[in-house]
Amino acid sequence: MGSHTDSLPTPATPAGRDGLDAILTRPDRAALVFDFDGTLAPIVPDPDQARPHPDAVPALAALAPKVAALAVLTGRPAGVAVRQGGFAGVPGLDHLVVLGHYGAERWDARTATVTAPAPPPGVAAVRAELPGFLDRIGAWRGTWIEEKGRALAVHTRRAEDPQAAFDALRGPLTDLAARHGLIVEPGRLVLELRPPGMDKGVALLEYVRETGAEAVLYAGDDLGDLAAFAAVDKLRSDGVEGLLVCSGSDEVRELADRADLVVDGPAGIVDLVRALTRRLNRE
Ligand SMILES: O=P(O)(O)OC[C@H]1O[C@H](O[C@H]2O[C@H](CO)[C@@H](O)[C@H](O)[C@H]2O)[C@H](O)[C@@H](O)[C@@H]1O
Image 1 (cartoon, rainbow, N blue to C red):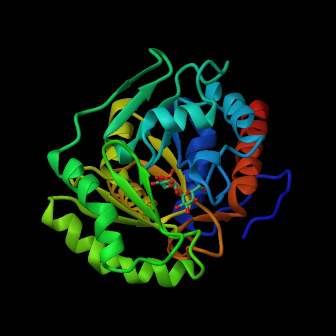
Image 2 (image 1 turned 135 degrees about the horizontal axis):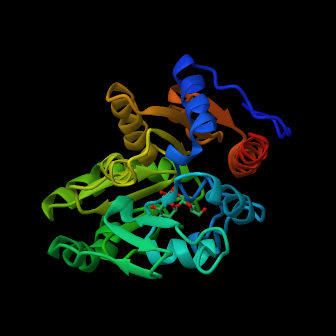
């Protein structure tokens, strides 16, 4: 795992080193995309209280003018991420895009508006059924439902045994979601029931195509970010260079195994963003 140093870390893989070189050589052709919870914002028990690492937004604002495009790609509703992230009206982030609900929603700093399709009817049906369903199956105490508008997330972090509570819920919630045409998105002690058809991989591919980027950095921490990692692999096979960054934690191992670079949580992401900026200032 990377340490908190001033220097730009070296990716562990040849593809990652090529990706970093491409970003440094042609920043005007590079798109940088960051997940929110666990990557920019430290994990906390109450999602309403999650905020970016105190140095994250200033660091992104210093980097953004030096690259072609910068975005946040999150499972949060776009408006929630913008509000909790404090992303609106920040000098330097005038072109920021926040892709919410795994890409189904979009906020543009240029217009300060969110575009979002209507949720499919299955979401309302699950909303009505979910509290009684959790009671009936005997969900652990401390399990609670996050209302997300076009999705519902069942959190187990506050249960006495969060992992056991998560494991016990996964099968039943998958069945419930399927009955209503939804899917379950597993995350860090959270199971989200959401519409199918969009994921961070699809969203990232669309964003890279839109920006015309020739190099992409993607940074994430959770299982929902694996689709974006796969998208970077696909982009590489199409000639776009990529750098996969894992915001490391003890909770999720899968991303670290696939990443070119593993840093120490949101503080490590801040160090990386600052080191990129310093290097680009010198070039
Ligand atoms: O795509 P992301 O930006 O990583 O969002 C994924 C989910 O993040 C949130 O839950 C996670 O963060 C919470 C606050 O730190 C934490 O309490 C929870 O245990 C984590 O799973 C959010 O609440 C979900 O809606 C997002 O889908």
